[in-house]
Length: 302
Image (tube, rainbow, N blue to C red; front, side, top):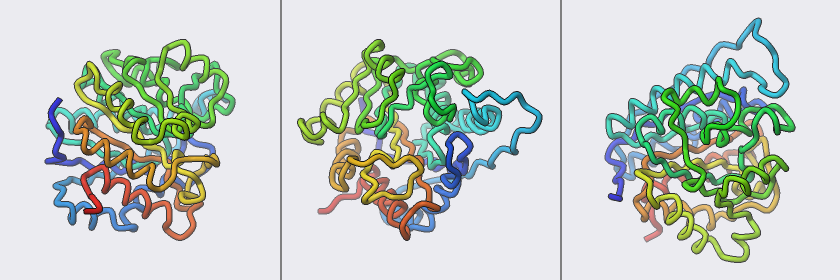
């Protein structure tokens, strides 16, 4: 695979938080720009186009399903995002999605799989987001986004991919998992999905984990997507998220992972989600994310 040089980046701000239980991540994209994202992209010499998806109107008079909360709002935003992502990929651009909660990944993955027939995915998250309506303990769709990308779950969500193109389990790598529901554990084992828990990172070290993840996700694929949930990072340094779980990645582990992904040249797209400025301490989480995005795009210490 050739190294993608980020020659043209399409930045999609998706101010949407109806896929999660707590409100606030809809303000995440704007918080990143307030924290200096545009200045950083310019300093790195990144050519980019910025686009903001309008949030969908609140659905009224729809059937309420406790296992699929706010389904119609999620469908509206993810269908719109899928179309934009597909168009950007077709134009040879690098889509960079700024969420919003992790349900937006349903649209990202649907758009990408219309273009990349064998897409690899590196999913950095405290959770695996592999629930379905049958296994979800909460009904929040941001906990189902990767399952939908694999073609599992409600047909209205999996149908967003259009032609039925989905990710293959052998091309998925989870990194940083430390809060998994029973149904997700069973799916990971049943489908043979590679999952590096925080215990694995403690034992192996981040460098080796990323070496293996890069190899697995890029082997036999025609591009790799990074989905980065800020709750993968320890809440002591990234407090601005609605789903904090103690014992996450350190500052340097997170940066090393993204630096290695840049050097590997395997990525065709990326998204950063679940930044909730209402829960942040100052701008700590937003500033951290701006730095992590910069590492992904090529910023180095020396």
